[in-house]
Amino acid sequence: MLAEATIVSPSRRQLGPPRHRPVLLRECLDLLGLPCGGTAIDCTVGLGGHTRAMLEAVGPTGLVVGLDRDAESLARARNNLREFGDRFLPVHADYRDLLQVLEEKGVGPIRGLLADLGVSSFQMDTPERGFSFSTDGPLDMRLDRSAGPTASDLLSTLDEEEVERLIRRYGEEPAARRIARALARERRKSPISTTLRLASIVESAVGARRGARIHPATRTFQALRIAVNRELEGLEKFVEQACRVLVPGSRAAFIAFHSLEDRAVKKTLENLTPHCVCPPALPYCVCGRKGIVERVNRKAVRPGSEEMLANPRSRSARLRVALRLEEEA
Image (tube, rainbow, N blue to C red):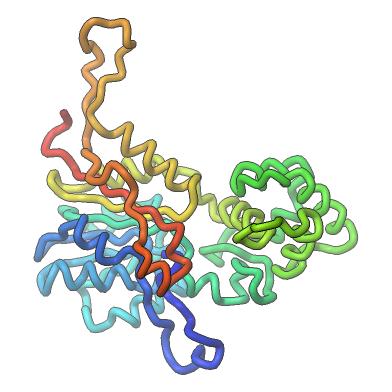
């Protein structure tokens, strides 16, 4: 979803809704193979780019249920997709509440599911959301602005060691100790409450990296965003639930934008496939382990050069698709 909506220029911002750029759209549709007349789930609607294509694929008798925890994005998606009427069912909910949503709405059987786990460009490019250091704004970073602590709150309440662990774990940042020390020093002067101040502190602590393709603060911003939104919490459980709700023969697609996310998706899908887990010393299988999915693509699908050129933010996207087996085998 990271590049689902792109603001063309500041001068265009008031002229209409952002232009949609759904990541890996054709690949998703081809690999999902949504049947006409079926019910599908878009677990992360964003502004509705992938959702629109799913609605077109399931046809005039199909239904797409769309979840998103960002109420503002969901409201825009509802408006963008108003032509589809009640064939689009928007739900303000976290994708990890999938089972609860399906039970409450009474929809099914599910014949396709998509989860684009990234942050949309609409969110990234809105200064008051606090995801980006390209312009100054409040250090918020919440996908659901109705609940939970902001990134500024975390930097104010966590001790230096906790900040270091957070940046090292979620940002995979080798300079986590130096950054945490600088943040602790600066917040004693005044709260770190804006994006540009955070970026400046990190850049001063790390310094310019020769040949670096990303800003020195990129990993720190990623770490805080993941922590604020609990992006890895319950992700493996969600992937399993997403596969289990499918009708046999249907498919689930997952798009990840950073290695920690992709690792969790890949590991879970591997664990859900039929394979023996007996000790190698045993002469034959006694575990009786059953699997529920088959991986459609063994290697993650990445954007092509043409898509990356048109939409640079798509470059880190990785798509993995699983087929629900007829029976646990």
